[in-house]
Image (cartoon, rainbow, N blue to C red; front, top):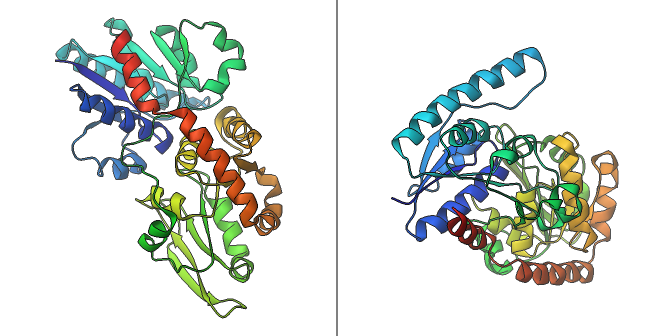
Length: 361
């Protein structure tokens, strides 16, 4: 039996590329198991893929404080024991990990049992888990733009690789996406989200600028996160048309949101950027300042450097409305053309990654 275990839980940025790879490998006849966390963000997304097999394993984020460190060690040991038993049962399993706290237990067990391990780092800063586990791995896949760092000197082991996108994340015609979201034909659509963490500052900005955004003739959809608010405001602007500001906790149709948007304001996780590229959506990126290694700033700088987005640090959030106001249709269309060209150059990272793992395992 051709069996592959994909460890990818903890955040949407780890889970969604794991699902994308699972879809690709399953189509090729491989038996896939995804090891995920028990967090609500994982549970919610997993429900949309009933044909895939998900197993929740213990785990928690690493911390230096005594309690956090003890908790991390305890849960990692539990994950190791669980993975050891699993790999004893399935002796042909290959391990692919997308990092995060769910990676340590399964990768350590796989190394002891001499199973092939492959790692994928999506961000332009090597995360703690990937950095720690890299010596155990057969190959480590890293963003192509990470080639300028010293870690890339080991070319035999560190392979440039894009961010796998799920098969069902398809860009839609903008007019169709707006109808799907029940948005009027008139006005611009501004979409704002902060990912599975860090949405609060962006939500507060929308609340402060509601009236100004309506007067700017914008329909606004703001994702507030799993613990956020959910409501809708409708108000007429100077042109007499009614504009909508919707606060939603979560969306199961991110491809529709990105396709309908004239502009997105969001954090700068690798997953969010990859999905914006796929939908050719211009964006203003506000990196989450507490991200480990400030990796979101690195991601945003690389994306903005090519003219596909605008980088705005969170401490300059007061300038956001002026930037939104100044972006005209011509500028946004130019950004879309650059995004489309870059999207074509990427190809299908999920298929490329699957090809390489199958060839090397």
